[in-house]
Length: 459
Image 1 (cartoon, helix red, strand yellow):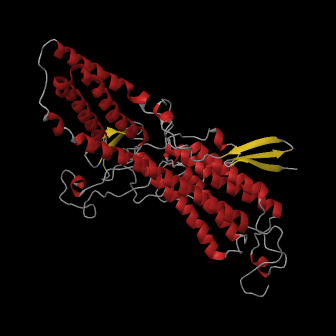
Image 2: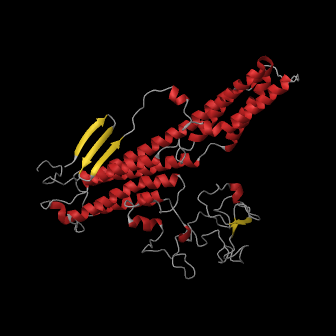
Image 3: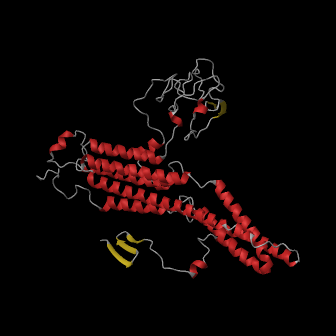
């Protein structure tokens, strides 16, 4: 017998024959001032202590030179000229927090889509009742309730694994050898991710030689890589050759090393399409036909794991619909679930945009240069009036300005492993607990019900 007792507003203690488990949720902590002022753990102090000490030592040196009678003071009109640094810091901090907030919002929206998708699959996918007149229309609906339940569990876990895959993808953690994939990533999706699927129907239209697989291409001469075949002009091989690792850069008309990460290509303008000795300005009228090609080496292709999982989720819904296990919701319900999968991919793309679009390095460098210039000029402005007393003032100003820059630099990439980054592990584990609870504790759609409502009102 399981008993549940609540002994705090945010903590639940569950007692079962297997033992006692305490489930706690974070809540808003009480407002505190002095503890936060004295706290170093989780603050930006360790990140900026070096630069602040450097400015302090420099200010001490300026005060020492002043104490020896050397006039190193500057007019007070210099500091207002550099006050624009504060505005730049405010913009920098706001931009970084916008990225942080967008990352959290997108990941939360993705979790919401996964929750809705798993719930709809768990409730709506069911075997037709024995007296259903439409059962004979689906000869493939031969699964027993237990077999269908296993397929539903696999599909629900596949949707759950999408969250983990997105987490690893955003962090650049490739491969399937991660502990959190254990027990949730089906073997079929793992095989697809490793590229072990061989299509039964292959296009050999433009195949040459004895290659086991030749992908579809737009023209007969499909690749810009020199694979040893004849050139498009029917002449000799262009510079390079088979196995040379050199490509002919058609856009620039020169050789270059082969690039293994050609996921983003430079946009071709009309000027770059021109070739020596060619008067045409477009590829359609040029004797050297240039087209966008598909890759002729499928073993070298790759795709993010979340894309593979989304593909498998769509195939699972297709099979459920084809075999008659989604007749309770009809085409509208099928479209709604597909929209949820599309929403999951949309949110992954939004987070990918945040992760792959950092703040320009030149902006960060220029900001640090302006802050440093301001802090190194400030001692010479204050030393005439304050003497040695300007050292702690300069230290406080340096701590303030460098702290703002340090915070902005720390939160601009919210998907990393720093202490201030988003706790993606906790989000995924909470989602996993919710899905497992649904599978173990909540009834399926047809469980405990009789009959089938076809919407006609005659049941």
